[in-house]
Image (tube, rainbow, N blue to C red; front, side, top):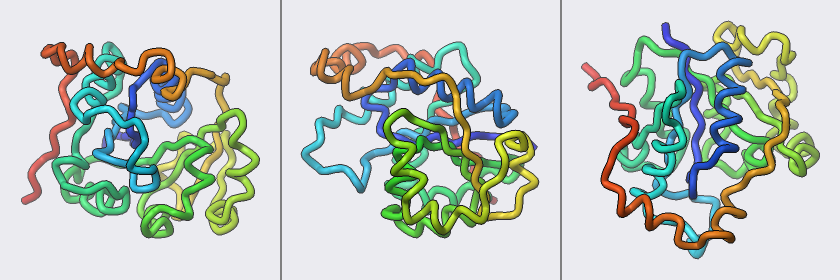
Length: 212
């Protein structure tokens, strides 16, 4: 069984902070690969959010994932869903020889109780939460954490995530990385144009095995 981490997000754009977290999580969780699931759209974000075209966000993720054990997946777009629970319900049939752990930042844990069927997500896969400066307090006090607290595992056991009884959650803390997509967009509002104009494909997306 290959051990795969899943990081979902808008990647608007992908940046070095995403890569740093992914590489640290790969080591901490003893993963074979990290998959970046580029979302067609975040149901919790205002439609007026400055969201770049999907093609540009995917291209930025592929460029940032280059030369690393990180794959970029458009599987949510192909499955025509924006909801994590829909994706996780399909993965066992699509990838029967892989085990998955969901990796997210503390900011996402703070709003996790607003995700569609979030308890079913926690019952489907282990969750690894990465500390983020400024978000940890809200995350630990969140309604979801109140429900998940009984399933918290010690960080020293993070590599054994595939043995845990679900729901299970591990809190990981790495060297802080202050880079953010918000700052990148503020400094370069037209960042996406260079990706839309570049027709090269530096990294192949994850292609699901067709279910039998």
